[in-house]
Length: 105
Image (cartoon, rainbow, N blue to C red; front, side):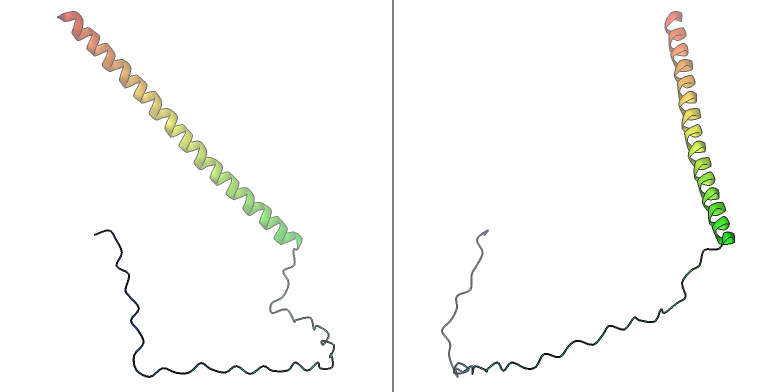
């Protein structure tokens, strides 16, 4: 079941083509032609120039991104802290209720 079945190679029957004769070609050295001088390609679009106004816009945009990401991270940390505190308060209340119930019995 787990052994692969390898097909047997039957003997060729019918028309068999003869092997192709390969003729060697002689290598003739040719005169070396110097390669043409490389031509600098024309830029497909203009180069971006950084003016003081665009630099100020980039700095302002980067600052805004940092402030937004910082606010999101701080709010997530605050949410985790509030959740942990509320779970701790719930645990104290449940423990107090269980102890009070045990004293009554």
